[in-house]
Length: 317
Image (cartoon, rainbow, N blue to C red; front, side, top):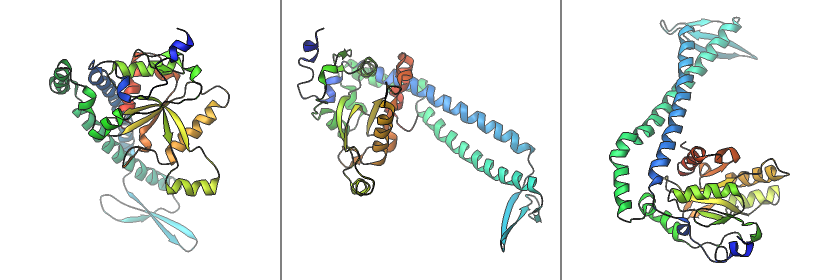
């Protein structure tokens, strides 16, 4: 396709995220949840393995609670026996002191891992494939067959207002928009079209190359006066409504190894992280709702589905 044709009717018009949806295939429910479950179960396995190793070590350790007392300019150490409750002096026993300190640390780590496992397992329970197939997928498929827009069902009223709100894509260097997605959305790299096409296949509305204004709050203005100038605006690669009620701002760092691209990318992510970005009125984009990907994240359909899962459940998986 000639360059002029590629740009014709694609860039010079105001868009909405709704324009990006190619169909209501229902993959938003199937593919996304399967990827989510796979990632969540992987997190469970990692934590279960660490918890198992901690429990093995705890069995072999002497039980007791380390006591630290300051006497003048020196510290004295003791330990309280678990059974008797007596506190015994161990100031000269360096090995015992460190052993009891490690005991306290790994017991706290054990408690943390158990809480994390409980939280993740509760999410897996909610996303259980059998029950989901029986209940939620069945409903979504029925709604889809009836011609309903799944995005209007899965996303909140505020998110759908955002989806229908007109936006103007990045007007700079339009000659670089030479790669096309399934739904004929023209982008600046082949890797970006892989992400965009996967969104479209899943029936996910998204904005491409949309304006991001940062640094408009008081904290950012104070930082600007102290630390000098910083970027107050960018054009984000993608913005996607997520299943937590917000908007995920996603950057694909496809040329991280080229020139100063890596430094500018890290600067952008730092600015996103530190300063206020408002997408839905009254609701700032949270730190966890800024996501990014590299070339390894778009190698195949499986990787792309896992990326979609991270974007739709930012900070959860």
